[in-house]
Amino acid sequence: MGTQTGLRLEQRGDGSYYRVILHIGSTFVPISDDIVEELRTHIALTPDQFFPIFVNKVGYSSYLQEQIRKEVQNTGDLNPQMSVIQQFFRQE
Image (cartoon, rainbow, N blue to C red):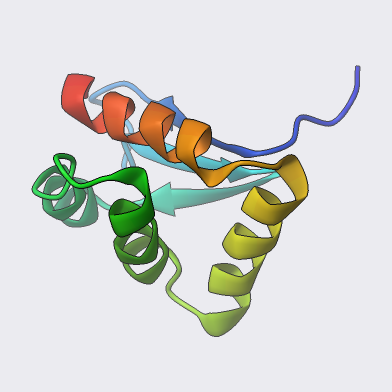
């Protein structure tokens, strides 16, 4: 089984401490409920506008922020990835 690339969000059950997990390639980062709620307030933005907010809220260190940016750059176009992530927050 190959390594998945790109940014992906995973929904966990209500019994989990973190209900949303961000996958950055083969790495994962838990996202707290308060950050999820805050990101939901920005889902009407364009993907280009949403991306820096997403990076700043989810990337709690400069290293993590750089990893997120690199993963997006390595997988190509920002818009499809951010559109999928924004859709996730609409449904979550």
